[in-house]
Length: 416
Image (cartoon, rainbow, N blue to C red; front, side):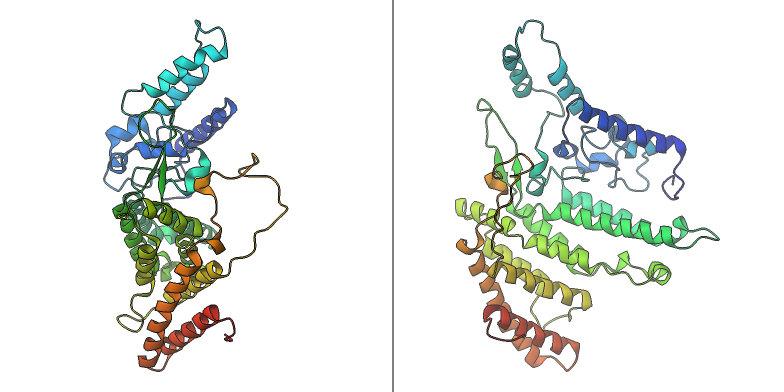
């Protein structure tokens, strides 16, 4: 209830400001961001007051886990249970970095003790650190996320947004004021929805990264299991490809004007067709036939976004735009821009090349153009049949237009 107004109680606002200042003090004493920390907490534990009261929402205050978007009405959390706080990772890393070791005469003499603290941890939350640059591939290490399962966490997040959005006119307006606050807060709600969807995208082609010393067992890199990746695509099919009309109710658009979320949806489609993501799928499929191959993934993605053109429900205006964006993205794979030269600065501000896991593939030399061409060829046959059988109107025009666009991509001599 305290969040259902623009006037946040001073006690809660002061507590959130304290946490922000504490986070910055962490940087001042040398602590980096550690986005993997929030994945140490099970999603359902974040709905439990007995868990959130001692631990908050992440194992470190150095994570970007600002507010508990998982907890649901009736869970019984107090306002302070929704915000981050100092956690067990902070205790561990400050002890590791600052503990005086009187028997060690030099920094080098401390190394054996420090390594033992890392390799011999016990307790509920073993300290882990993943550099922030890996957040694009490790779904556990993303900004603004929390919990150990992006699909479950984002499902709860959507349930909360569906409660919030219809109430925004009541919570953001007052007699004598215009609708600027409503417009701003609604825009923030749409951004939050997009962010939660992005957390799920990272599962597809995702890889967990657990850096280890040579005396620790197990691999450093593990691909996300196929069933979790397929579940992520099914979730996005339902929540993104199907137009989320609940995000733009008449009660809001009649006050602030028409609002479109299609650009956010297109952003998700572009992420799903990122060449680095598809290349990672290829790397792991080459090692194990049971992994999701790029061909299987692209077939599943096409079916999710297009169905079988001409059968079933006709695509609405938003879906038609997503389908055109899909073509645009495949065209960039077939006709990639030449690499830019002469740009210094290296990777991540530190110089040099990106780690192999994060490097962009050489698209012209890869299988990616062949895969894109195969998808376009299958789709062209389907939309031609759909155009021939569709009644006159926007649907027939859409399928005809898609066929012409594909012809122009596959045969540049054909005018659009």
